[in-house]
Each structure stands twice: as C-alpha cells, then as structure tokens.
Length: 504
Image (tube, rainbow, N blue to C red; front, top):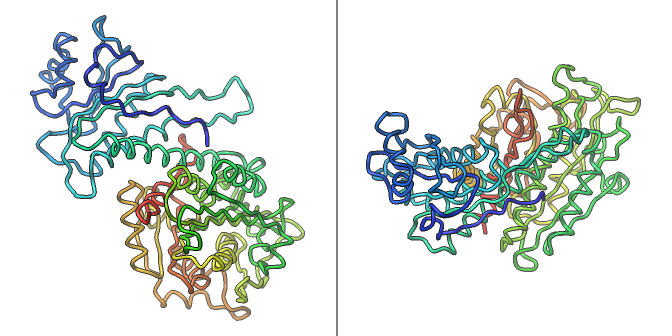
C-alpha cells in the first residue's frame, strides 16, 4: 500500500480549537441560528462571522453545505471551513453521512492543505445500522481515498503531489474512544484498499501485466503475516486443464497467470470465503477487435482483479478473524497468429466445452476456470468481480454495479453491504429462461448469446459455480471513471470489505 494518511482521533481538539495549529480547521455546524459549542467558540473569536453568514442566508448548515470564513490572529489554524451537519433534531441517514464526509474531504483538499483539523457535533441516526463509529468509518474511507494521487508519471516535473498528510478528528459522542478509533481505522483501511485498486487500474498496460499483478500480490503477502500467495504459470495451468483461461492469452507475448492469495485469520482448517477477480490487463478484443476510439480504457479491464488484491490487503490490515481466499485470473487479450479465433472450441477445467463466438467475451472464459479452481478450497461462498459487459452500463449506468447470484441469502448480504459502504449494487435475474441463449451446435455452450448480455454472461459463469453459493458483480460501469476524471475508482473494494467485515 502507498504511505497512509496520518489519521487520528483527538477528542481534546474540541477543547483547544482556538490554539491548535493546522492548515485547515473544519467545523461541523448544525442548521438553525443556535450554534453548537464548537461553532459558537469560533464565531466569538471571528467577531460573529458564522452568524453573519447565517443571517445573510449564505450558509444554513444544511447537510453537506460548505462555506469558508476568514481566520484572524486569535485562531492558530491558517483557514476555517464550515460544513453543514443538518438539523440537530433530525436523524441523519447513510446518504447524509456520505454528503458530510465528502464535504469535509473536499474542504481540506480545496486549498491543498497538508494538515487538517476536523471538529464535529453529536448526531442522531435514522437506523440501527448507523452510529458515530460508522460515521467515522465513512469519513476515514473518504479522507484516505481523497489523499490518493497517481504519481507514476514518467515526466518527474509533472508528478502529482499528495498534499494531505495529517488529519485529526474530534466527534462529540457517547461512544467510547476505542469504538470510535476502530471505526476510523476500518474506514482508513478500506480507503487504502481502494487506493491499491486505483493504482493498479491507472498503470498502463505495458507496465501492469499479468506478471506485475502476480508480483504485487506476492509483495502484499510478504507484508502481512497471515497472507500468503502462490502464482501459477501457463505450464502449471495447462496441467490443471485450464485451456479456457489459456485460450485468452494465446495471442499475447505476456504470460497468463493464475494468482491464489490466502488470508488465514480464522481457525485452522475452517472453510474460507472466496473472492475471484477478472484480470485482463489489456483487452484489444482479440480477433474480434474493439473500436479504436476508447481502446486505451481497456487497461481498466483488470479492475476486478485489482479489487481482489486491494480487498485482501484490507482484511489483512484489519486482521479479520476469518479465512479468505482471493483468486485472480489474469491474461492479456491480443490478436496474433496464435490467437483464439471465432468458432474455436476450448475445453474448460470443469470438462465442459465452449464455442468461442466472440473473442471479446473473454472475461467469462478466464473466470470459468478460476471458478472451477476455487472449488479446491471448499469455500463457504464465492463472489466473482469483473468488468464484464457494456450491457450493464446500459442497464444501470455508472453509479451502480450489477449483481447476479444463485443464492438469495448471499445476494441480500452483498446488497446490504453495498448500502452500508455506499458502494451500491442492484440485483438482476439469472432465470433458466436465459440459459438457452447460450446453446451451441458444436460445444456444450457458446460464450455469447441473446440480447440480455449482462444476464447471459452471468448465466455462463453460473455453470461453473454450481457447487457452492456464488454471486457475480459486474462492475464495468463502476470500477473506473470516464472523461476528464478518467481513472480507477477503487470500487467495489468498499462493498467487498464490508461484506467480509460483516461475516467476521
């Protein structure tokens, strides 16, 4: 992981707001003309600056509202920001907490602050799932996530600068400091995992190859005592009968890799939970070549793998008391004299055969063998993550991941984790009526079929996941940003991490 933000809980901060030095002081302010104690103390020293803003209607304290006031010689902080925390009489929702956390983070980053001080009033919540600890978890994730910069640019003069380095937080709460610190630490660990995933996604395809993913995974295993890693090369995969996975990398000079990470935080011999990621480090489409206009974005086709690697580091950092297996199926999909052709038939590790009608539907091919491979661990459940179909973007846009599952209880747990972690998914059906779209005259199944592309892709994968509870996350729309903000998003690390935290 990159160097983390120095993020601490400092409940003494509220008592020393005026004298504590920092680049930026963020004060949570409730709605209404009666200021909470912290805001009132700042208002007094600034000759009524906050009340003047409220009187003029320039700041109302609504959830997520931001404002800036000038500091003076009586305050040690260089600048002061106000963030609205809503009406103190009303309970805050999860969405409210997201807005407040985002506003705080944006305030600190807006003036390129290096050190930040955050002081927040007490809150009420609209559900039993929410608490001051969960608020700090969201804040920790937001702050660590925002601290990320992509600093691998070749021209050193253009390197990004990670401004935010040290943040202290004070929250008026009845919860114990131990519980609050745990929430902050958990959120920060999730933010770090997101940053790992973003960094892998942002690296160009000539650097982030299947071998690079393997080396990154091994480096993580060297860092954490309970995390181990084994990497299988093409010869080993051939012996295991993984011809389906190997077919994807046939046209590439880069060797395909199967990466197996094991975190043993639970009892010895206890069955693990498993997460499986698609790791196509660059996807040209193969012989079924993609249009060139946005092909550069196909370096993001390994975001499923990146989320697995990031999540495995989160659970290792948090030392969760369960066993978890993370599998990455990685290849580079290139055209070439040895590349798989439309109409070719390959045999999977499970023994089933696949007619490849479109070489650009390659993610499901590497996952098919990975889902068979993971059976050897006797998993409690398996979740695969993949930037699998453009169709999921047509269905759900760029804010929501697609979820399909053969087990309703598992689906509900993942959906709930997504809501809690503000990394939402939506369930789509994989009814038997869709399975016929994969019929083939020349093999057990074709790798594409039908109009419901996201669903039939999941139907294809379901045929290799019949021996355990399984869910599939299609993150084609959520794992990366488009346009001016182009880059990895770090999703669905929060969802996966929260799911595993809940299981622990």
